[in-house]
Image 1: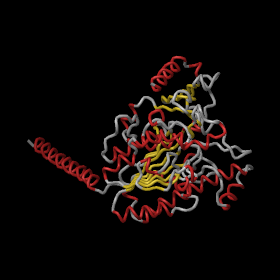
Image 2 (image 1 turned 90 degrees about the vertical axis):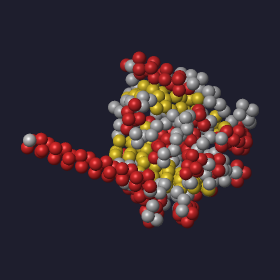
Image 3 (image 1 turned 120 degrees about the vertical axis):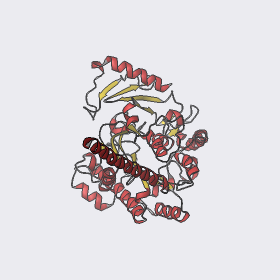
Image 4 (image 1 turned 180 degrees about the vertical axis):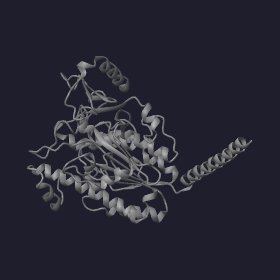
Length: 441
């Protein structure tokens, strides 16, 4: 009888505790549901290798603000963009679609009838049909509008006027006759101060609306013209003036990110703001000139395709430094939509990368690289890339890359892709090649 009474008492206590925990969980869920819609700030670096952050292990470059963002959020050190060139990379980011889906394959469009000497002059005309098609797509700003979001574009933007991306307001006019190509007035942000962004945040506060901010300064992208104090700082750390300028640009960009995050904090918006970070493509600075190494930008290798991807929402997303999961920038839109309880459009192949099960069940992510000056999807395809942890397969298009062979790398054991191992894994090569063909279809 005593044991029965004791057991009954224990069950009563446990039941009470379970009830309390259930009520606590329900209260927390209600708190998340009832809070105001979070602001969304998308920070994009421009031409920066995955190695070039202090939190990623660089010995010289200092990026304290991005490091802080990485520490306070869910950070994927093995993030990827679907292509290593700015215009198609940014188009994929805002749509959540691969280049083959959104139609933006390169930076400039050419036609077979174009005079080669006048291609720059006709870019605007050649791009108009693509812009018309792009406007029919649902971008992230479009998908946020029904929830009452305002949206603002600042920085790089290749697809004509900011309105073509669904933004309510923006800096880029996109008029070719007035220098519009890849950002025009938007390219002043960061380099010439942050006033436009700060003013927009104030405007959104005045309107009492949640906002989506696209902050994509052309930094550390050339021209590499950092403040002299930063240049002198790094000049003492390398024998190359070109490398010193690039390193200084990385820190200058980081300082503008700090200014943005500090302003949001001053406005007491940090706890209700989702920060997302990604880079459009990689960059390895040449030591002897202002250009980049061929293994980086426009290349299918990790120094062109890999980027840290991070997301922070204070108090809502648990900070984790994930060094093993493979994620893609096409996952960013689905992840944000999931946080806001918005259905993902069916054509999006990305996943919610905050869902660990979704990450673990994903088999592959893909990449595709086209010519800088493109005409059509198949005629200008250079490479398809298939990632299947821990491997990466690069499949060249025989038509545009004659003589180049398929390459396979273990990117976990060999992150700089120095050891090509396709001969040792013929069955895997065939399997991934078939997946590349399926992806093309």
